[in-house]
Figure 1 (tube, rainbow, N blue to C red):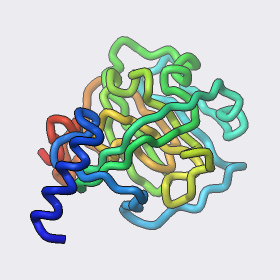
Figure 2 (cartoon, rainbow, N blue to C red):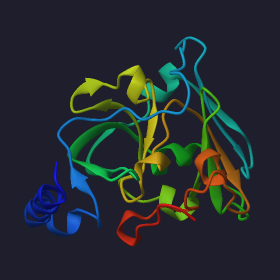
Figure 3 (cartoon, rainbow, N blue to C red):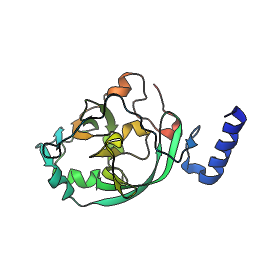
Figure 4 (cartoon, rainbow, N blue to C red):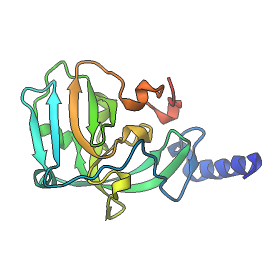
Amino acid sequence: MSLFDIYRRRQRDRELYGDRLPPNQKVVDDWPVLTYGATPRIDLEKWRLRLFGEVEEEKEFTWQEFLALPRVTVRSDVHCVTGWSKMDNEWEGVLVKELLKHVRLRPAAKSVMVHCYGGYTTNVLLDDLLRDDVLLAYRHNGQDLTPEHGWPLRLVVPHLYFWKSAKWVRGLEFLPEDRPGFWETYGYHIRGDPWKEERYS
């Protein structure tokens, strides 16, 4: 594809999606798989979601306990730091705000380290995590997530670059200050706002 073709495609995408499309992103129809390391094999009988750190009392959910929480459907766009965007995704899962009704945060809690099966981590400010459309999702566009896309559970933070929407989530650690996760230690931006092009630090 020539530079002119790329320019015309971006112009077309801008006309179609307007302010929904951050700067220097192109819309794709497929869903690229980008992962560091192998896809973990997860046994749902042993799966746990742990809430810990700056909380009055730690809380742990089994898979069945998590599925029993009130579920929602959220429609949002995906913006990858590598330059592609996938529009109009439908996610089904549990809002983070709903999940946090089951713990009492200490006043010191300001940020969250998201821990994942496979060893991946990413940091998200608590204010970002508590937005009304941020959820822990297990279904996408009417189908269970595939293992490559984060089954059984992935975080979805629509207003940040997609590396913040961590796959294979197993824990939320509440922290008194923000600190870098995996990709952030390798030079990715500490927050990752697509509209400000916060790709790298």
